[in-house]
Amino acid sequence: MKSRRSFIKQASFVAGGSMLASSIQASAFGSIGRKFAASDQINIGAIGINGMGWSDLSAALKQPGVNVVALCDVDRNVLDKRMADLAKMNVNTSKVKTYGDYCEVLNNKDVDAVIIGTPDHWHALIMMNACAAGKDVYVEKPVGNSIGECRAMVAAQKKYNRVVQGGQWQRSQKHFQDAVDFVHSGQLGNIRTVKVWCYQDWMKPGPVVPDSAPPTGVDYKMWLGPAPMRTFNSSRFHFNFRWFWDYAGGLMTDWGVHLMDYALLGMKAGTPKTISAMGGDFAYPELYQETPDTLMTLFEFDHFNVLWDHAIGIGNGDFGLDHGIAFIGNNATLVVSRHGWEVIDEPLNKNKIGKPMMKPVDDGLLNHWKNFTDVVRSRKMDDLHCSIEAGTLVATVAQLGNISFRTGKRLTWTGDKFTDEEVNKEYLMKPYHNGYALPDV
Image: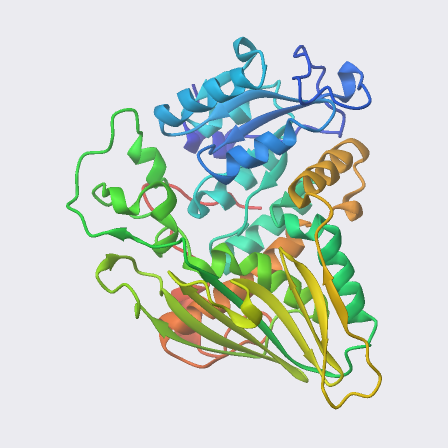
């Protein structure tokens, strides 16, 4: 078996876009709808299957002509659970190989595309290696865990010309698209402020507990990967990784990339000019976390501002919603969330344009997977709903907010770097540890 370091050096591009012939029959989910010839089957290897990676695989298997041939996780307990789950879905698990090392998935010639559902600090390295190995990629959000990683991921996709879809599935849901179309119609009038908020009352960091040995079946050294070496602590593991800078960026990069994405889409915006963030551990200072449980960040663009506001442990957000995006115009305000969208008139506006709540009518995750598999077959990259460039734009904006918070500074962004060189040196690229490095592209 190749080590992951030798894999980085030896992985080569598999030319062309045709799918490998599949010896795997479609699952009960994958056989719904029209049939696909063996040459059009898409064989999936899922890497990181404890949370959203499993949701992605479940959605993938509902697409015609899609099969699962490989599962990979550093936790043997998760692997065993997901194999049992597949059996309940009538998948022939004798045809599914299991791995603890993602390099073995990439070396599997039967795998056409991979899901990356790992903690955030693994996304860039696996995505780049997968592209080099000739695999198409569905990578969970945030696509990159630093601005430097985002840039390297875009370069890898361009070099190897693989299909790479970011996991911002709201881009494939009709009511979000309709809401943005309404914003673009100009009927709201001049939009001076976009408010984006995320109040998640079900989320809390873990308690402060002693360090311990990793659970039986967990390859903790592999879980850490390029992150700094630390003694295992259960409150930093699995779901709670998102509250630590070594692995993620808190709620800003968790839900924030979903919601800020639509703020940028609605305003046809790129990156901001200045960023000012303030917050802290105001609600749960006794719990185990590094990222703030409360944060407000002001992003200054030309002619408008975007305000990000997040809080964990409470759910009473703006407009009676625990999350949403509000485009505040001279004539009216459009509010959109996963619950739907509506337009609220300004009282002094004589030309009423208000709309009642337009509720969701489709499943964004299933749509997103249909879009991905369609492009895997067509190779028409422009048809992707969330290209790697789109995913890295909002991931970069989220990183800008976190960097402002961590430095305690109002930062100016040139579109390429900060005007503060010390901040550039410290924060543009996360350092890699334990012998890992991003491949040159």
